[in-house]
Length: 148
Image 1 (tube, rainbow, N blue to C red):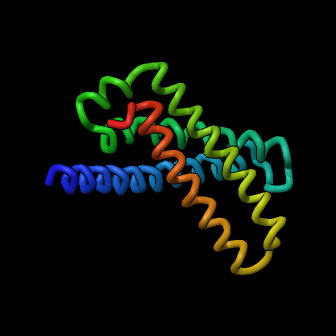
Image 2 (cartoon, rainbow, N blue to C red):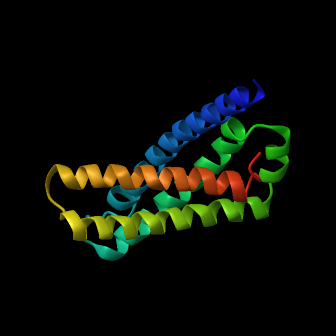
């Protein structure tokens, strides 16, 4: 019976992580968009402003994700203790940076295999997002919150 309770607890934790990830993604995209078009007054064709705005969005998104994860996802006393310090934040960011790298590599690999047009590209992008979501959750649970 304890195993079912643990499975349900982990499932609920993962679902909360998915919701927090969605909020963080919206923040990332909003900061990226506002930075590019309103603050830098650039377009999507301006490489340096795009790089700056994407980076600003990533930083804002990861900070929101970290704060919300500590408040709503990883909520046991042991997780709170392990997850709320500078080392934990740096590990949290490292997992996110690796996730970003995985997104780039898997997307490039996917476009080499299936191309970049049509519904298959959209499906491939969704698969990549799912893989990276699982990586981010498990990486953070194991490396930051010590799997509890």
